[in-house]
Image 1 (cartoon, rainbow, N blue to C red):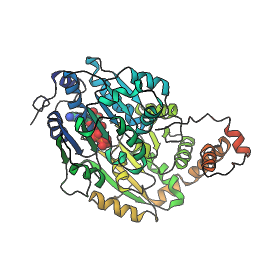
Image 2 (cartoon, rainbow, N blue to C red):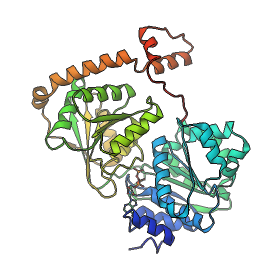
Image 3 (cartoon, rainbow, N blue to C red):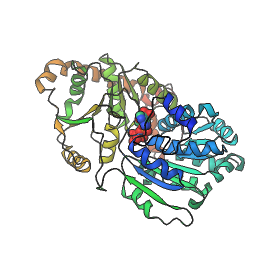
Image 4 (tube, rainbow, N blue to C red):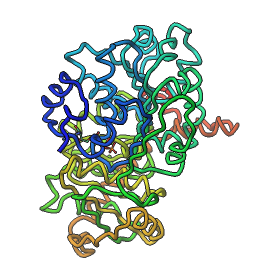
Length: 448
Ligand SMILES: Nc1ncnc2c1ncn2[C@@H]1O[C@H](COP(=O)(O)OP(=O)(O)OP(=O)(O)O)[C@@H](O)[C@H]1O
């Protein structure tokens, strides 16, 4: 078996890895680290939780320690929370080498970030929107370091290469060295056509990219070996009652779980409903101010909340080893989002389970997910209609009604509604609820 030493990782870094109880490289690390160290671009596709972060961090940190200049590497990632997590990992690995990291994400102070960028950090971990903001609005002094980066990483590459990031990514690329003057590293658990296409892109002076994909079939995606996936067929109007029943089953009542929903409104309804039912719950979605997002994640990681209700802002990359269960309260439209969501459990060789709530409207989506992962889901047998009717239907409907009333009183979603109307050129009506929203905590306008 190849060791970190045999594949070329620096001694100081091996010590730092060992201090984190990481002793032997995973398959994706064994495949990518030597290729990156020898100067190749790399496209790494491997299951969720298989150690892709260290697959790009270890070779970059090894090379950086030989010539610790700044800005040595730029890591782009789609969400703020993921950027913070990657930055924490770099900071922990490089602590003995006095590493300097700048985190450049939306929702945080622009000025502070500009100063950090001017101070030539060794690594910048950023979301494309906020980095593009700095590129457009800060002086040359702030961004000049970016013109000499040696490594560019696109983590969750398929997401970054999707249309929604195109413009911001383009602005970032404009100031980076050309592809033959830097190494480009792309990683994801869900290799898509747009990612795969880059392997055939001619590289004028550089070495050809190494493409590593753990399964032979290019249009299938592997999920972790110890992840049990099942479905629960239920009527759409009693989903809350099923959720409460499932979370409070004897075998589940102490499990740490993430519940994924498709809309921020659903996240808020469920958070309040479950809170009324005395479940230790928190939530994470894009309509929360950044300080609340960070706080919610801290509470969940620390065990102060047992259940996290989240939209897809939490579906990618987040590494919380204590998560035992993922519930898809809503089924995502994109099969790859399913893969990322369920991958929040069963990480680094651990076991975990994922249960998907399937209503009459979701059958098509489930079939396309099963095709993408090349696997059939089992039926979740532990919950019966009788159990739900007997144990939770009444109390959940009362809890939900109270939740909805409180949300109306607090004006949840008003800001979003007004912004949408403004975008569409309509004049927002100032009603009673609108007035109340002024008292509700200010949601900071921010780019991701
Ligand atoms: N060689 C290793 N041995 C043991 N644990 C490891 C090793 N490499 C990484 N890990 C741990 O595995 C966990 C998952 O790693 P990481 O977050 O990099 O996964 P990933 O492949 O990027 O997943 P995702 O696709 O969900 O982003 C982390 O807690 C990490 O510390």
